[in-house]
Image (cartoon, rainbow, N blue to C red; front, side):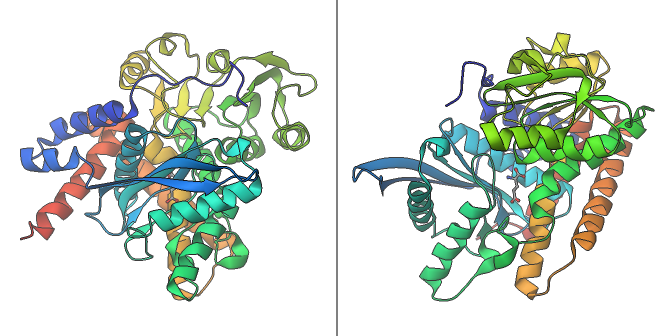
Length: 422
Ligand code: GLU
């Protein structure tokens, strides 16, 4: 269970997402009708469903699947299992998926789903029953050509395997392309498990280059040591960075001489968390964000960098591994302080980009090597980064506003071209 050090989040994510969207819409002088349409999710599906627990009791869980916009194609976005899942969080995450897919020219709209539950407190059998029933409840929306889920906070390749199997049982034959982030043995893509963290490393490399800083030798702090943060830490360490602080839901560790991410990961496997790692000082999640470093990677949840701690952040560059870790108020403070923020929809898109590769491989039943996957990922991300950076410079806006301008414009253009039905 989370200790009091677990990161608290600030504000309402949906309000945050709307404020960011309206900022970009103002820059674009977006048509009021399009603005109104895009400021609401297209479809919101809420389900309350029963799950039998191991002790024979029955509990009712609440889940969601929300489509923000299907304008650019079938909707895409992860499934989150966390006690904090609520409708406005899922709405915000769905909207961010729309912009993320559009920014990288993936042929997808944006969606997100989640179940309010604590996956750490469920047995494996309970997790499987919950996943199969949730998949069944939201199945009217899900298909390889309509809406394709993937992992997010609290879910993993095994959960995706149960999800895929459930959809396949309903259909009567295997439909691997219905979900991405699966184990490689059942149609997952090489490189998918590492893709988000790899993308964060690539974004950090681009950002360092952009502000004339050497990534090798720079001090890095990573909040969140899950699938995104642990991989980002390992790959940035391999690039020559000094990983001075990392944290997870139970707290953080700090060693100014540097931590070896593989050794920390081993400690996590053995003890269940980063706390107590030998030779490191203990820090809270809040203090971790303010540690002296050049690169800060928030890779946990939304609302971590706020107007309260932004004045004390010491990093030169923030690379957002999480979705929505920086509030709009904090963004303004960081910009005024000259801190470069590489926004979530740019920095953490490695996951959905390789999800797209996985979907394409499944549909073609033709699989790529990990080298091919990584090369395509790097090419696509670097291209997107440089495009956004050039636009942001030209318009004198932040990378976040630049990225949103590109994405919102593409979605608005698709809506105009498709026209209104009827
Ligand atoms: N949950 C990830 C994200 O927030 C991946 C989504 C996907 O692969 O569809 O981008």
